[in-house]
Length: 351
Ligand SMILES: [Zn+2]
Image (tube, rainbow, N blue to C red; front, side, top):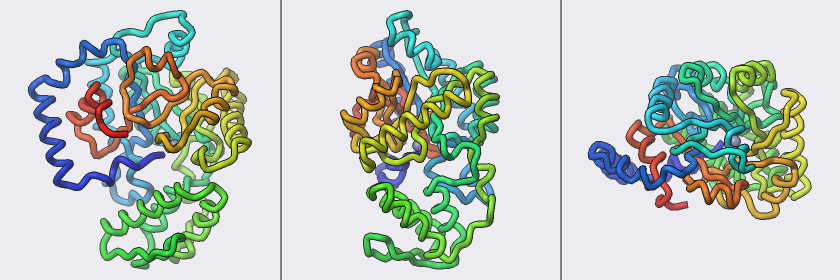
């Protein structure tokens, strides 16, 4: 998961940005610069394909990348302007065995949500597109939610209107929108704590909000290993995304090694093939470093992915395939915004 892009822009700034993007799109500016970037690798990153406005939606909204309809339109866009490649082709290219096509694009998903199977997979099949799904292995085939989905559930259903945060502040809300903002703030704060401390606060949250979570409530949130094997037969590839989704700079290097190797070997055992790709949890520059990249490389992983803004020139990817940039997609993005995010101008956004 990653949610950092979504709440930072003020409304007025984002509407100006939207107008500029629409203008650039409408006048062909975005397309004009494309030819300079034929030898690039554009990696798009999704988490969940669902409708966050549907009745009863009570999990973490910023993890929704697109509604099924928007996802379909985005795949049409890729089919028109890009050549979608598989991870296998990227590895063959890294090995010098073959060239990548011009305007190569790789479609990735993080975490392993069931909606990838139910909603994204049929659309990918219609387009005959490969895609790469990064699995947090201890959440596959279990009803254990990620802490952000658990927190979103508790905030959604609480009757309370305030919460004391672990850092001492007290946050109040008086409507659903404010409550969602506080929920997102709490989730962002969790990312700053060491893993063990974070788990303690997560465990205390339901009681602090007067919530008891019904048994098995999250059973249909994540995919199971049968879904994984079924999609593998249909051309979808899988990569590792740790066992428990810690931010790797917030645990010891021994734990990093256990999380990387543990998730890789679990998927290998379930699928009976080598797993060659990895995605860093949260994926921002403060969430990985040289020693972590070295551990990932030593595990037999051949390519690892961040959530820093893409796309990337192919030469850059070849120089360091252990910090490949990806473009974070949110359900808030219109199709012109999607087009702008996938264009080289996206590299000039800060991060
Ligand atoms: Zn993730």
